[in-house]
Image (cartoon, rainbow, N blue to C red; front, side, top):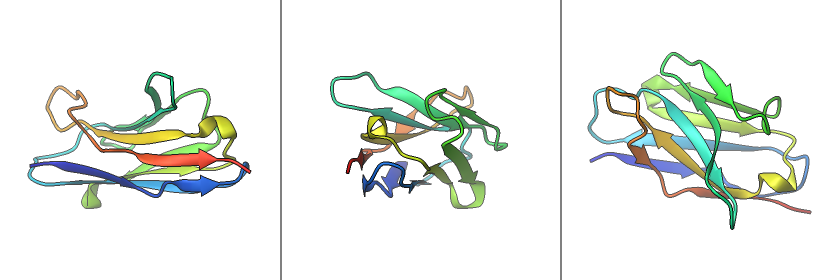
Length: 118
């Protein structure tokens, strides 16, 4: 059984930083793409950033230059470094992992709350 667990969320002031972590555990052959999505109340879940197994990142325009996605394949872990946080970054952040050969996201975690407020 595969589990995806996010951590690192919390309350931070505007302009501050947070680092989210996502650990994938269980029985699997390899992890293909990994991604971070977020969902604010009353809105649709949106892609924040994703990263290939080779480490090539992709970002939503709203976070370019502020967020950095990375991964440690040996630890089956992905990270999201979030700098210069804004109130509009407030959301539940979800980690997704693609373990199938087609590269489709088939596992996700329960999410971690990020609140940016003074």
